[in-house]
Length: 332
Image 1 (cartoon, rainbow, N blue to C red):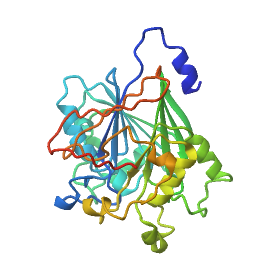
Image 2: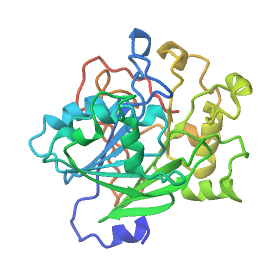
Image 3: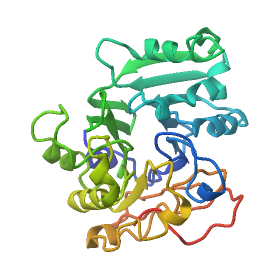
Image 4: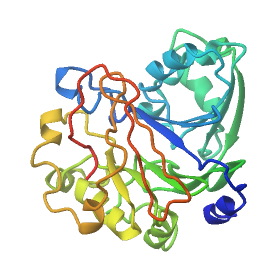
């Protein structure tokens, strides 16, 4: 059942779906804390998606999941949490042992990600917390945990659907598309658009265009500038311009740059490093998620796209503020 048909089954007068999407970490490769990265954040990838009924879905567990865990622990009723992993490189898993709910015997966690050859998810995390790498054993994670694999295809819970597609990156790496009623958000933190050397099957470009078609919000890998990429091809990441081209091709309404280079400062990100002449399709995304940053240093974000609206409306709402926000957007 596609998103359009799901929305048609909603009862008359029933409120349209709302997604709260908060980026708790947007940095790539390794954390980069400090005064030069407070604007766009130094934590590694972690995105929280929250529904109005309280359901919580987390995408990747970089260092950004640690402050998220503190926030979750402050809630009276945390409910079930599902964590989706795109892959298992350090910057996407290093925060999981610091996510406080995993030590709570009353907590329930679903852990989903692509299987890696003949190693399953539980074995991967047991290895991460082995005595050679971490002082606390995996058995100390008292939460109820259910592990399952999603290499391609969809996972669905009511109207909320997550679809996986393999991306161009080392190991079996996926990107996710979220569909909830008439809303859609895609999360693709690691993907080398310009390199066809990965074993991802025939017609990959056509398939990713179909996968992302008309998505409302696209968070995509934009780790390098064009000049940097000349020396870093085959490293598994894309450029700002390549991300803009993809967003244009798929008809995305909003593009958010993600997986920032750990060496890139806030000043760099606001300077000529960004594309100077984005396409019309990318430029027209003037409404939407205003910030894609660590919420401890900038506003968090609410995405609301009423399904009944003739034109998609993404409303930004600041729900916490520790620093004065500006009008600067990460997206184009």
